[in-house]
Length: 74
Image 1 (cartoon, rainbow, N blue to C red):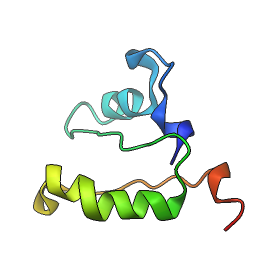
Image 2: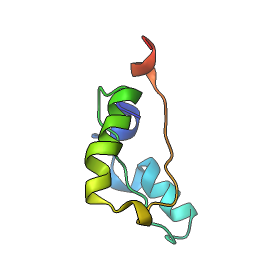
Image 3: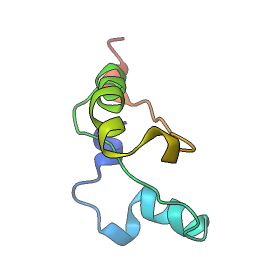
């Protein structure tokens, strides 16, 4: 998702990705690709064009995708 997951003003210990990583006993790397103001279409573009270049597809087991208010016009 967009600003909901970007968490620019949240302490690193209280972000959703930190909490999820702790719940998973740090068995997995949890990365946050949220970008403020982005719609789902923009995030799909980012996953395809940018994130997949920095993180090899074979290393990705799960993608959690959060829809937010930026999709209301869709």
